[in-house]
Image (cartoon, chains in turn orange, green):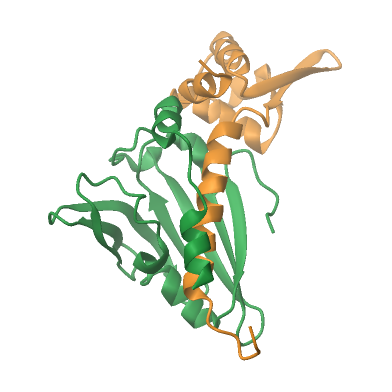
Length: 105
Length: 155
């Protein structure tokens, strides 16, 4: 079991995905998320706990509040996969699309 | 060059030695000339790929047995500057019927003089694929290799 696997399974839940997407736009406290979403504050806390244990979000104290934000490591595996996929695909595209130059090779 | 990557997207870019119209045409209608033929989800071998050049069209893989897989919807088609298409493939390598669980790819083309084109590709909303990452990782196994590109580039 990897952390990445747990993280992406955690995102299969639509409410958690919504919370994650909101945090990706701007870090927020539990109360702010509960106000903007049709779920209770305890439910938001529970979702955040799951996202945090999956390595997708991280938190820090700001005064008397706890602010949650996206953990950049959380989606690393899926990003790495597609980054590699597209870099290699674009290299093939580059070879196919590039025409011989006028100068000597 | 790789630009800033957001949490849920991947961006990569390349410069090609060709006019912008040619670069756009090769990427879209000529997709079968550069796409790695091993990358498909058909049962049979890949015979050809079709990029339908219009919004509402599809990218279609056709197998040697006549089977067909429409794995992408063309969401924007603005030659020669931009195209957007969906990635309707789940992380367990199956056709994803729910558009809400599909990610999407935007490709932009910028002329860098008459014979050079800068191409930027962004694969975004990767978090929509959520479930099943482990299956994909296992399917990918040892990952891709650069052998084919090296061969193509050397010709």
